[in-house]
Amino acid sequence: MKTLVLGAGGIGGYFGGRLAEAGSDVTFLVREKRRDALAKDGLVVESPGGDIWMPVKTVIAAELKSGYDTVLFTCKAYDLESAMDAISPAVQGSAAIVPLLNGLAHFEKLDARFGRERVMGGTAHINVTLRKDGVIVHGDALNRIIFGERDKQETPRVKALAAEFAKTKADWKLSPDIEQDLWEKVVFLSALAAATCLFRGNVREIMAAPGGRDAMLRLLAANEQIATREGHPPRAAVIQSARERLTDPAGLWSASMMRDMEAGNAVEADQIVGWMLERARKHNVDDAVLSMAYTHLKTYEARRAANRLS
Picture 1: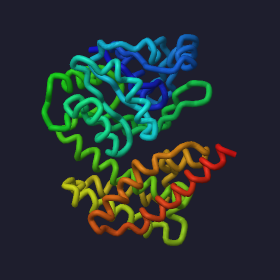
Picture 2 (picture 1 turned 60 degrees about the horizontal axis):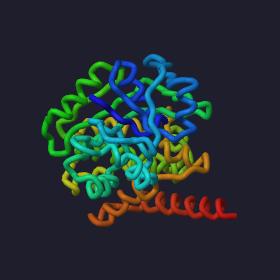
Picture 3 (picture 1 turned 45 degrees about the vertical axis):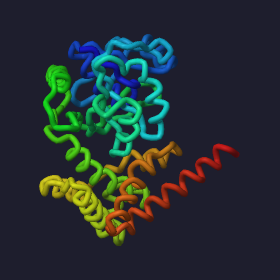
Picture 4 (picture 1 turned 135 degrees about the vertical axis):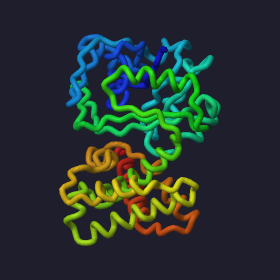
């Protein structure tokens, strides 16, 4: 099985690296600067699950051809259009795309561009970053990838991908209902992103602030209602786990979107918080905190754009 991984950053570098480490045929689609760095230093991952330091195969967009079975699609949502252009030469024959973007907003565009039958479902649960020196840093034990066919079938291609991940050190799951898994993740993620971006703090700091716990629980309740009215009611155990993590008085975690704001980077405002806000209004669900968070994010985007022009 031949796998193309879009990028060799945090998520792509980690999961692609685990596949390569296990002997899978993996190629990373990267820019020239990253290719030169990988040729010089190899793919380097620092992880509590075991470090990786190895040479890997790379290709740049101008050289990309067909011949792949699977494409791990790991861009940010705001780079979706250019990322689709980049992988297009590889999406030929029976090649399948496994998107690992946050949320669900990307499926409409991927389906329109490549056909729904080519686009599987996937999600990653991991705290990982690409350091300035090119090292991929995996922050804690969580390193789960979940994938499956959106029509719930166990096809030969999804079983082949599962067989590849079964050789690795990664925590993986072949989901019998990947859309349910994706909805449950966005219920949690959009609450975490909305709260940590709006209040500019981690969970512990929000829980220590007056009204912080109430605001967080209000977000989670709204998101649970949205998912339910969209036909994907979250399972009780999932909601309980989300509630515990989102209200942990010792929780040092925040959404990557908040960290992007702190660093002055682009954010996935429309694709995560805005996407859920649209559905809250569609279903007449309490949208107060989502609305304030979205306004905050769009204000940040406007200021960032103005500063880049000045």
